[in-house]
Image (cartoon, rainbow, N blue to C red; front, top):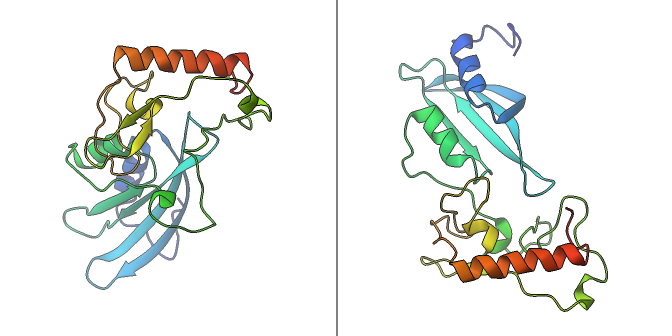
Length: 198
């Protein structure tokens, strides 16, 4: 951030400490604006890498450095980091408003669809993958809204805690041993036909 962007940056050090505290974010651009009651504020935009596909998640951090309570707020498309970001910025993991997928609610043609089929980052399925008799992916039904979630949503190897529903963000139950075995067979089958990158 420049020392002189349309005037002095109030509490520049405090803003920088917030940005540095979110180590999972690569900060990109910002906008400086002014609110009649809260004074100068900054909308700061950044990107978060995703392990599961080729997309990145966004984050928007809004800070009001001229308020006595150092008012700040954020929104992010990252379901994985949402609670961690909330804890870093506010010191707790209380309920907050998670992003939801557009294609699950709105019927528009210009939408990113990543749930069906689940693609690998190098281009996904091969053309003849459907011709091979394969076990189906395992789905976990949400106990709150009833939506079907891929096994991956309920059990993440890198983060074995409970996953969240893609539709309502409620916590999902952990897969049973049978479901885990079915999913293992599913992965083996996909690897044999070259459907997913190793």
